[in-house]
Image 1 (cartoon, one colour):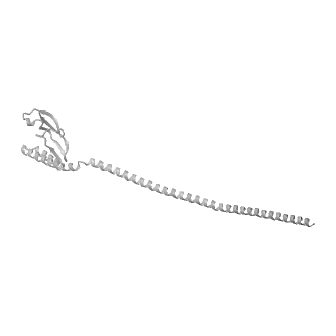
Image 2 (cartoon, rainbow, N blue to C red; image 1 turned 90 degrees about the horizontal axis):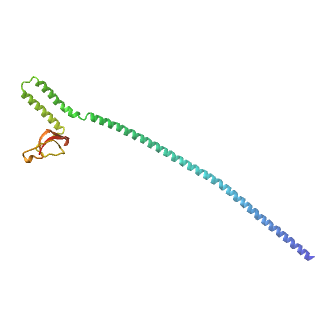
Image 3 (tube, rainbow, N blue to C red; image 1 turned 180 degrees about the horizontal axis):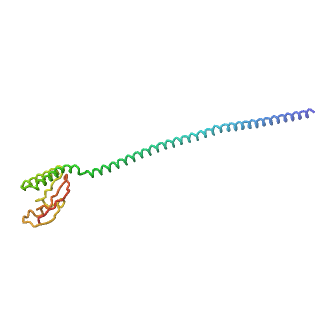
Length: 215
């Protein structure tokens, strides 16, 4: 009897221990499940701010790109306006320069013509007076005076007469129109006569002298 009670008591204790262990395991499982749920809840709650941060980051990048595009458009407009202004200024300069060149060409000899006009007037008066003149010597002297006046006027403009007679023939400044034998050996290869005088304008040849050369 005592043994039976002891066995029953032992079994009861084992059953209670088993129940207690089962309850403990169930509690642990519940704790794990709750912890998991809490963790998942925390993860979900953390995802919401991440999505918001991503959205804000995308908006920030978009706004920055829009600002950069607007800045580039402003710079492009400024450069285009500057280019158009420079093109207009250059076009005006080109037209003005062409006009000035044309005027310069058209009036290039204006100054010298103005200075020569008094000489032409003298020639006109000399011709009028020579029609009834009986003294040809006076007419010749008058023509000489007019000639010297014209010569001096041209000299003042930079015109120089090329002296050729007695000089060595130089193909750079002379144009030989004939060669004639000479008795003097020292005159061989030299200019012995001028058919047309040569001229320089401000030390630059504007007409070669046509000469006769001794041989």
